[in-house]
Length: 312
Image (tube, rainbow, N blue to C red; front, side, top):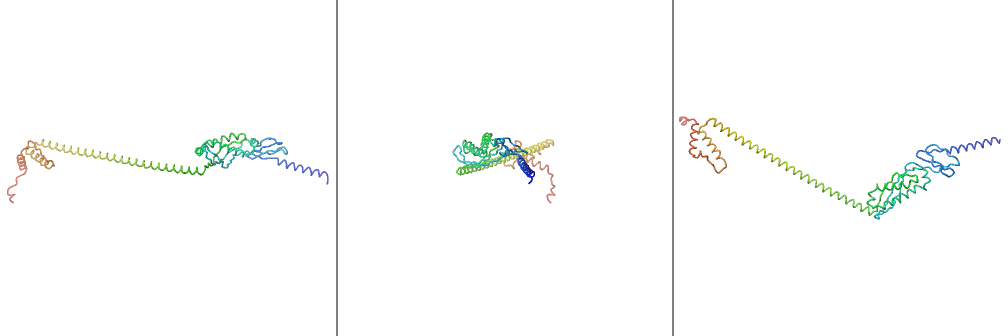
């Protein structure tokens, strides 16, 4: 074979290998990722999103770091409260990598380090409070745990966004006692609500009765007032009629006979009453005088009937 051809073939192979190496050295960093590059075993730079070229045989990719917020759900951890109650608590930690270089070189196995730090910090916080406070102060525990973890993981290039206590599981006997206490509290509230309902009902009934009595009394009062006003008006009318009669008698200049008849009629009306005593005026002391006077007045008032007419 011609040496020139051999040289050309070798040169072509070398170019092909160089092209392949060059193409393989082109790296694309995706969104929300960072790439740590080492040159000859030392940290060289951090690649951000975009196209980069890796120097063959000198540079290498040390690690790819995700900049997204990450969530780690840890297994339940046994913790002891201040009043010596052992319970299981599992936590959920939300964190984000803010410094890829510190995250890569700051600590070996950062996730494992964060898990151990979370467990020890949680034990310290729960150990300083009693059971009741641990069950009712989740927000306070979450806040304290997040602050401590955020400060501790800052050299590792991590930011703890939030921490949540997922489950708090006291021992079974404690849970049974809590259920009994809760049931007793519910029964107590039920009794109180029933008592308050009965009290309110009695108050409303009493107020209704009171209002009815007031309205009844006001009705009777108004009725009595109207009745009294009616009687007074009737008496006034009678008195006015009597006065008008007397005035008319005086204006007509009635004689003694008419006056005697009127007196007799008044005596008759008085005798119809229920009184057991009858007081006779001084000018009518003689019954015979009254009768005779009345008779004369009646005869004078009644026309005489002819005898013949009577016979027939």
